[in-house]
Length: 109
Length: 114
Image 1 (spheres, one colour):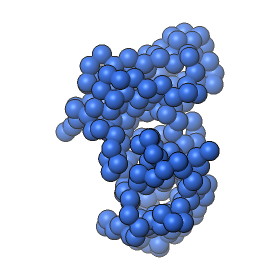
Image 2 (image 1 turned 135 degrees about the vertical axis):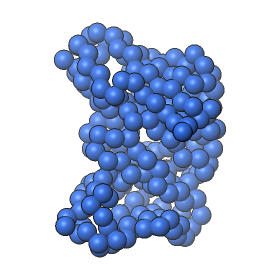
Image 3 (image 1 turned 120 degrees about the vertical axis):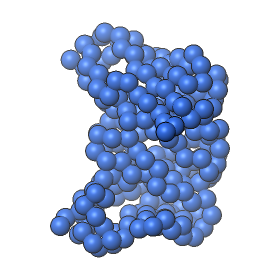
Image 4 (image 1 turned 90 degrees about the vertical axis):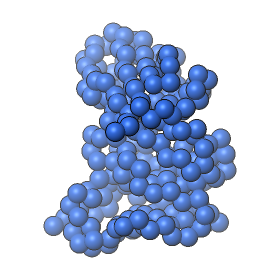
């Protein structure tokens, strides 16, 4: 079966750095996406990785290792508004998105 | 601004009473998706359309139907809602569903069943 694993919940302090990990086992691989989802709202696209390495976008960076089936999302200079769920999703060989259940990130002052 | 619009944001219906959720897009994307998402769970794909080609996920209950009368609009019909169908329903679009294309989501419709 296809599977995406992420920690259920993480807590971090305002101004700090946090790394959210994602491991996946899918039928084929056509890219990995990270989405942010605030409570009661729709997911919004954050980043995309298809080749190994780090993609940086402002305070957010995402890393991919295809050989290890592993990605992480790195959030720097955390702000209170970063409190949200972060969902990892992989496009499989049929170009369908396989979603993780999300990591709820709690930011404390 | 080009966008994906879902109506209504909140929908309350009675057990067994048919309900229709709507989605429209101004992005002119070929692919439209309907997801069901329950609290603290991953979005679950119900259907998707590639243009007019309808694709039903194997585990989508028969109670759920969909229509796409044109490129811009897509509807989700729940024929006889049960208590287990209470969830957030998300509509998303993608230009062609290809490799690097993210899905663009509407704000979702939260469905409650009385």
